[in-house]
Amino acid sequence: MKLAILSKEPKNYSTGRLLAAAKSRGHKAKVLNTLKFAIDIEDGNPQLFYAQKRLGSYDAVLPRVGASITYFGTAVVRQFQQMDVYSPNSADGILNSRDKLRSFQILSRHKIGIPATSYVKDKQDVVAAIERVGGVPIIIKLLEGTQGIGVLLAHNLESATSIIELLQSQKQNILIQKFVAESKGKDIRAIVVGDRVVAAMRRVAQGQEFRSNVHRGGKTERVELDEAYKEAAIRAARIMGVGIAGVDMLEGKDGPQIMEINSSPGLEGIESCTGLDIAGSFIDYIAAQVDFPDVDLRQRLSVSKGYGVTEILIPKESQLVGQTLDDGGFKEKDINALTLHRDGKIIPNPKAERVIEANDRILCFGKLEEMKKLIPPKTVSRRRPKLQKLTDRPL
Image (tube, rainbow, N blue to C red; front, top):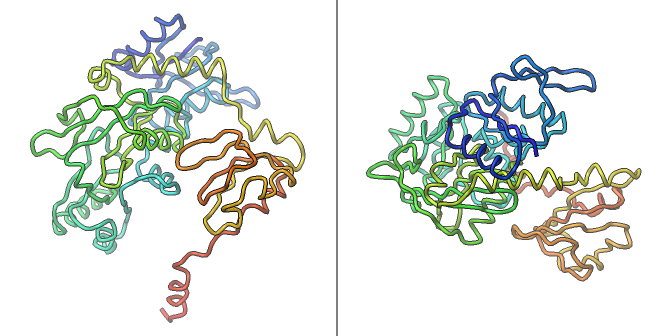
């Protein structure tokens, strides 16, 4: 495998470890400075130039795109993708994970633990937003902050409103987030590679500091995660569209609370803590994907007119709940159930006698018109009647 490692810091610990891990496995690898690329866009012929020379062919690219160059870095990754070079983290996945607000918006559609969060612009909305996330104390986060920078804890309403007004006056975008008190200055960093958690550590804040980041002086300890935390980390990375990630979670009273998905997780802290060859797991995963790439079912199985692939969500009010796939008429309607997703688990090629449960997600291939009939109309929001009454009143 010929691998390009994108990094503007070739002497960085993580970059050096990835390069060494690739070479020790017999791969050809080179660190390329992300900022030295030029993107040429031509009709039917996407190209990249590096240091004024046309880039040679690569099998894969491993992006290590820092926050300060997100826009240009993801543009370079996207161009590699247009050239059919494999990347474990897509440009869109990196953008999704880098933007705190966007990542929480994406996660909010799924049944996965996230702390109550609010984003407001008008200062008149601040107090109501604080109440909606559970009241003080609250966490105030800058959307552009990294490594614990721009994360503040406000203990009372007066200090919270003052901090928020000050930050907004400086044109800063901030999130108001519930303070998960039971985490007690601790969090979990899980390294996800594909469909596995390859390592995890607990970070513990020191002294009066509530932020557990290693860059803020936090101490680390190796931890073995239970299945709930592993599944949450893997699902969060998958939802975000990244194959390699560091997923940060708080240990809430109701289970894992996803805080952040890092598409370029640092390796020094967690390798030192766990003693594991995490860089090697990154390289092995990329090499396996190059040798046996994932197939895009939506493209490959949609060649026949009127046929395609779709995912059917089964709400609790669906008439399919309690029936088997056979009773639901899948076979007679020429619909094949490829996988069934239930409670974070994937059941491949489910049998016809499998009973359908509420909140199942079934990936199907078949006649599009027949599959549309299985998708129930969107349920009317419970808030609609109240909104209707409000709209009836004169403003």
